[in-house]
Image 1 (cartoon, rainbow, N blue to C red):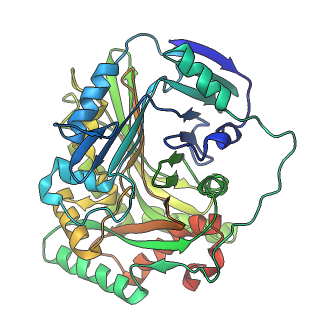
Image 2: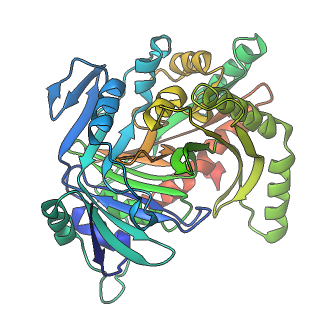
Image 3: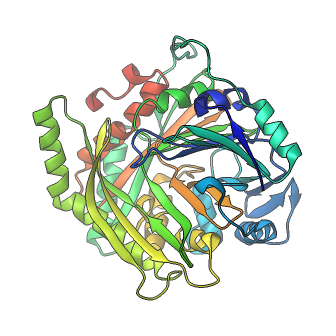
Length: 459
């Protein structure tokens, strides 16, 4: 493995020259991360693994195996042992996303409407070089398999500007406004319908979403940089030929890393939301209200139980631990409840095995997962695409880290789409569930310059 030091600069500035390069990607810890963390930059993939309509493709050629099998084959072919240089979470490997519709490849009974987006159902670039930025120690370096890959990536990175540049306001096409596939009445009716299904015993919880969208001429990466000024535990920008993803997710799907002799996995489902208050007194009241709300706590506990049960299929007996249940996490614009469940993977199993068992994340489906996904397909009547899928990396040394693709803007053909949703339980109030979606959308709409056109009641 080649390791070259880089002069420190903002990773957001370093990535800027690559923002329009197809298959360039940036994963970075945000201000809401529990630790300062890392930024990972990559571009110029050696290969590209994609999936569309149930068919996997490697560099455009169809494969005889399914997408997850192809992912496992590709990962095994690139696997490297050895020490993790400089404690970096990623060296070389695969970076990309798995769209929500890929769940049907794992469980055909969950098949619903196809993705409404031109982006693939799944896309992973295979990167022989990555630039790593340690946001805590402010050190930076390139890790690469070859000198050629290291030279190309290091030479493409940008420098920090000598002086701060004034932020430019978002630009929109004339008459742009926020559209949705639901109006308030139909969303509330849909929530009420799900509550009736729960009352009838079909399921315990389902996550229901509406797709907000706005026409914009703004560069996706500029919107992403605005998003990163606010709440983001897991920031991600992925550029493809068909469009781009800008994500400021608050939720880790799962992380795999070596701990002593075992590969350990950590999942951190998020369920339960309140806006931050305008005053300290109001903020404390809202936080306490969330922490003690029976509906929100029940919602979180159900998903924590689902996650623990999923992990039991890939973890050693007796190794699963609930490190936190319904922990209150306060971010810039919202309070959340977060649970943390960890375990040691069984010998011979790795990150792709965990991905197959856990996907899609239970916090964005509901419980039981299969029935919840059937209800989602029936009620939403539209595919989700990258939304509610997973964004992250599979390191050549066996590690992995994925966020849940929520608080994610999908850019295609001059339109930005930002789906937002929430968990519906027996105690759900349709109006409150509708308003929660607008609370979650607020930061994305503001980054797009559409804050004034958002639903008035969300203020």
